[in-house]
Length: 470
Image (cartoon, helix red, strand yellow):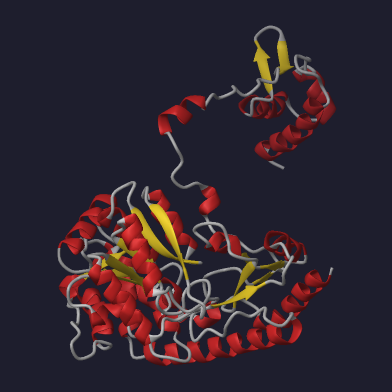
């Protein structure tokens, strides 16, 4: 054994000695330690120096080596920050349960991101490798995004534009670093702190948090009796009462409920927005997850810039590909771009290049078909188990797309306690309360069917049934 290894071994044993001594106690002398460990004085001194560097002992010339007195960590005083920062706009309590990391052997029905089996993993890895070797790894991309990627987003909406509509062009598109950042930019750019923003209730927790972070007052508007959309009359009243100029919504496969606006109601809602000189922030988060219908974005029906459209690729391509787009027209687009540039200058060219390669490759459409088939099978399996094993009326509706189902718990059941009890049985689900901008209107939970282990759906639903029976 060489000298360094011997010193390290002696240091290990010396730490045990130190642990058994009180602060200020003297260590045995070098001579005593050489005898004890059968090592030379140089090796022993090297071991002692290791403990000195770790702060466990201190050497006092002419006196010996002593166990250091424990130095209490200084108590920091952060009280001054309370006055400096002022009132909270959004704290950690607004961050949804979907961001929770699942531990081992947990059935994860809470997450918002599809598992690898549903994603184009190999295509993404290959695209990232090629992008890293290209000029996009070195060059600064345009602030509004790569022209080819902007054109692709515009064409996607243009294909759904009907007669009388106005297909967007690449110049209307802004590339964003993910859908959440896109919402934050839109809210900051189109409203001022203190302004009201109308939102569907229940609705996406991330939009609620982003609006509050921007200093906006969230005004909830409930869905109508069908549960599919807000009542246009109620929406008009909310605009009149609050003087809001923003209405945020998910017309297709809303998160968390899975609801889709009927075409006639969508047209009526858009007319209310127009008549109030307002903006509809259309979050098309689940565009790629249409299972039983075709997505026709409302922006395809808008020629005057009332609709600001947000679409992300993160969920359908990869959680690591934080790429989204905002489509807006007129001064609204200019203001959103200004916010984006001030906030982050531009979006990674590597990620844009990789995303563009994946979605324009010949294998993209076949991948989407396979993914939708798998999601449809997962949805139907989970819906069937809920209908079979949970009380009648628990399932609110069968979504025609998206990744989630929305459950109403029986009367008298506390949703938070139900979620906690399921968690103790290693089943993670999302509590309904965090999806409401104000007080929840009942006991709800959200289940996501795009996570791992669909073969354990039955086990999870049986756990839920058992909790309800206790």
